[in-house]
Image 1 (spheres, rainbow, N blue to C red):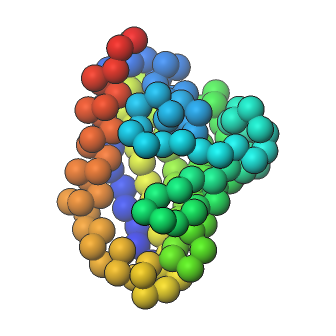
Image 2: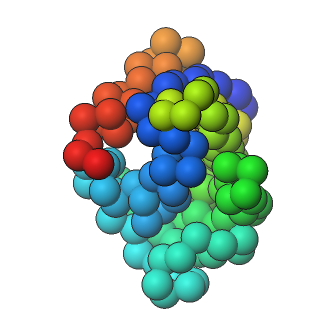
Amino acid sequence: MQRDCYHEIIVDRAAAQAFPLFTPKGEEDWVPGWAPTYLWPETGETCQEMVFTTEKDGETSVWTCLSWQPEQFHARYLRVTPGSLVAFVDVRCQPEGAARTRVGVAYQIVALSDHGRSYLEDLTDSAFAESIDTWSEWINGMGR
């Protein structure tokens, strides 16, 4: 089973300020409970082929950055949660004037097991959109 999800949000920051918030290190500032373990580079600096892990709901996910194009405000990641799912995560920021950014978030998810299929069955378009909408609320609520 496979599912593609896409949603856009607007954040109240210029693209050059917004894009770094969608890196693993940047998300530490606004995503509750986000605490990656950086394997390479150990500093957590985002770069192509970086590797890090995250823990959620008793599962460990291994992430790598497949494409890193900061000058174009674009990053693509591969997330593998063994025994559950594989996801390609694509983030693109597009300036919307001097102080706003449109952020497109795409997930292409493939289930690896019954557990993964159950997750995808529950992941409706509206559930995905609601989840991503919270991102703009969290970011727009941050101090600058």
